[in-house]
Length: 329
Image 1 (cartoon, rainbow, N blue to C red):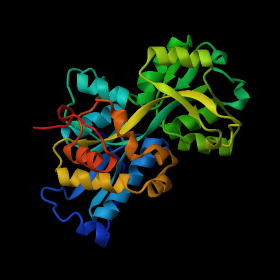
Image 2: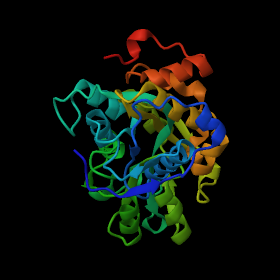
Image 3: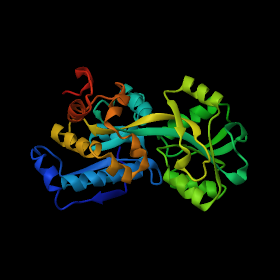
Image 4: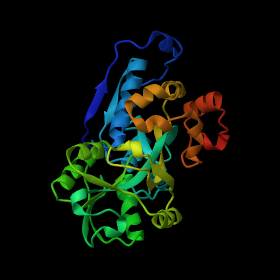
C-alpha cells in the first residue's frame, strides 16, 4: 500500500530533560516513526510534517511526515503498520472501517485508532478572477475542475457535492501545488479544495495572481448539509487576503490516527506533546486553533480510540469514552 514517498526527517540528539524524565518507560517503542500526510501544497502535509518534527524533537527519536494520497490511503498505511501515524477525515475513516473504502474494497481497516482531534476541513472553491466565476452557479458546463489527489477527502466528496448542485464538469486530479499551477496557467477552470485553512496552495496563488474564493449560497449549503456527513463552517475573512468577509462553507472533522498496536505509553506521550501546548501547535499551522482537548468528542464513535490516547483525554480533558470504544486485542 505504501507509495513512493518524500520523507521530511527530524532527528533530535536529546529530548527535553523534563519531558524525557516523565516518559522513562519506553518498552516496545519504535526507533523511528512516520506520519502519513497527503500531497505537498496541502494543509495535511504542512500540519503533519510539523507535528512529526515536534514529536521527534521532544522524544529524541527519528520521525517525519510522508507524502501520500491522503486520508483513504493513510487509513490503509496505519492499519497495516506501514506508517505508525497518519491523518484522516471522518468520512473516509467511516468508509475504511466499514470495508467500503475505494482504496481497498472489502478490507475493514479496524487497526487504525483515534489519537487526537486536529481541525475541520472546509470545502471551498477557487477560480481566477479573470475567469469571471464568482459563484457555483456560474461554473460553466464542462468546466475542468481539479479535485486534489485521487482518493483524497476532496476527491471523494467534492465531485459528489458538485453533482448534487447540478454542476457538469471534467474531473482532474493531482497534488494541490500542481493543480494551483494548472489553474494559474489556464489548464483548469476551478479548483475544489477540501483542506484545512489557510491552504498553502491558495495562499501562494493569491500572492501571484487575482483569485476568487467562492462561497456556497445559503441554499447550496443547506442542500449539501442534507446530503453529506458535513457540518456548517465559515472561513474567516482574515484567512486569506482575497476575502473581504467570512465565506460560507461546510466542513468535515479531521483526526490524527495511530496503529492500534503501538505501545500505550508511546501514544500517550505523543498526545501529551500535541495537546499540552496549543500555542506551539499554532506556530506549525493556523488550522491547529481547533487542536484542543475539548474536541475529543468530534470522533463521535467513528474510530476506536487508542488506549494511550483515551487515557490522556480521560485524565486531562474529562473525556467520557465508553470502554467499548477503546481498542483492545
